[in-house]
Image (tube, rainbow, N blue to C red; front, side):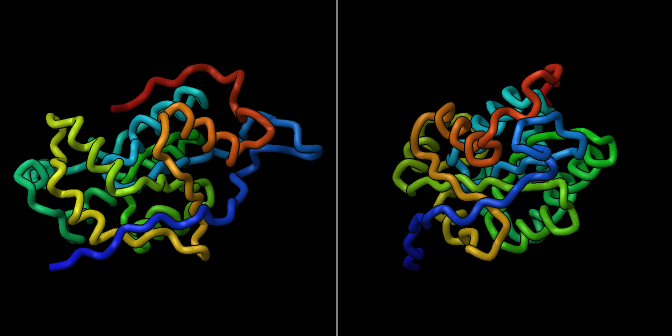
Length: 212
């Protein structure tokens, strides 16, 4: 079976976050919670970039890998691709966590592969506090990164199955796309500049512990 070519697409339009600024454009403390979802294929760097963003923003952080039920982890360790049915309890756990943060008035960063449009809609629809950044990386770089982390439960041989399932964000989706083939710190800085061009929205906030 010939797999579809994995091509990068240019970054789509940007969309404002929830009340990050007031009036004359000067940064102000966020009073409405923001849930920032960092998405991308395995190896895109979403966990590292997400953790860097959470640290800079002083927001709570959660890695999507921790939401997988044990049967999913076992399948991936054995090189078996996950189905939509397998991902259902995982997506539900992530959205439950997001809703808990929103209900508590807490801003947070969470990662999720969000491979398909339906998954992205599941995460974003009905949640005006949520915004998503999708990291774009070439197949060659993804393969190199996955090879460099042999102890992770997601093996490199599953990469093609993820790329086959991937539906890149369309121009009509409220998803920010960012090329992420360089240093993770640089990628995080580019995300911050794109979403908060006037400066960090919570620069004087207290540090918040991450959840890994």
